[in-house]
Image (cartoon, rainbow, N blue to C red; front, top):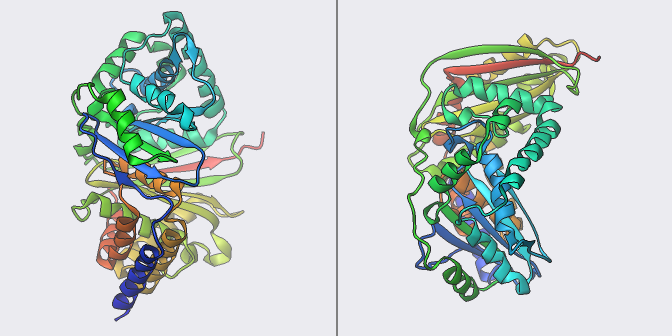
Amino acid sequence: MRKIRTRLVLLFLLLAGLLAGPASAELIKVETGTSLRGVYLIPDTKSDTIRVSAIILAGEADSDGPEGLAHYLEHLMFWHADNVSNRTFHNRGGNAWVNGIVTNYYNEGGKDDLDDLFTFAGRLLTPLSLDEKFMRDEKKIVSREYDLRVSENSKWQVREQINRALYGANPVGRSLIGTPDSIAALNLEQVDQFRRAHYNAANMVLLASGNLSEPELRKHVLKTFGNVPAGIPNPQSWRDNPISEPLHNTLDIADDRANSNAYQYASLSEWKGSGDGLQDIYTTRFLAELLSSNLPGSLAKPLKIDNFVVSAYNVRLDRKLRNQIQFFFQSRPDEGVAPPTVAEKLRASLAELAGRGVPEKSLERIRKRMAREASRRGDEPDYILNRALRNLTAGLEPNTSADHVARIASVTKAEVDALIRAVADSHRTVEVNLTNTGS
């Protein structure tokens, strides 16, 4: 009966939104007849700004060159796309970022900048036309970024060590920025090989948002990409290569740059999910929300007994490989609590929760919380855009707000129970005891 009532509440929220009239923003899949992997629009008549995001479905995990190659190419392609007749586009903002899986380029402007915005996106599928000396000198910028983001950042370095140890030879464990040696080893031939292999229409998704109509979007997409060949889609076959070897590794790291002592735990477990990759994203979010909450079934209560073993922690669940789930736990042990005590409590808590299953009342609380958020923020362009990017990074299509609400309602206790059992039964673990030396 409780499940029926919950479904009715969610259905009421959805119907209320529909009866209230069209939302100010919603995801629309636009058919253009081009070779692009996908074109989506998030119309927002209240905005004076239009953003065109061009997502290349390839990242560092798709590279077999020196580490940091996809990041170096992202720098060069942004300058190339932004440079027409030796001048940059004006009166708009833009940026780019890359992770292990996708590369995202975006530009913003007004109605008068539409030609520029789409010209920028179109130039991402053309050969680099920058001065060779400029491109070689850009490695110095990448090196300075390494100095700023990595060399003085103990958290970044620890995460990279965990990633390398956890994923071993699988390319998902590659360093995003690289190392000073790998950056120095990058060359333009490797860059062009990566560009030719992955920067094509079959690997590009366009996400346009702002004060733009569907006919306007279709017109500009056809003008820019109407005659662009598809190319070869990127299979990202590394997603299908699970890591079966067991690993139990502990890293003791002393660093005077650390803000405080910390204990971090990462694991990799077998988890095939439900067979619906998009629904599995919602299952992982439910469990992450539960473990991070103060509800029954969370990690908070067992980790905060005995004069508080851990008073501050966060949890993440990521699915980079199709049939495996990564669990990441980061904490700051309280004064006088040794990392082995935290490790013991964490493992015992996960095993206990896996054995008895997650409390249904806690799941329903999370479901209502997420449904309220969807109702409150469902027509916010940034909320829809971030969800679309999350799905694309997982190799999945963006979903609409109505589908988002339906999937929140569809998460089951059986699915979450299966996930926590997988997390508790990890076959690869990496622990880090990070000590602030105080020097």
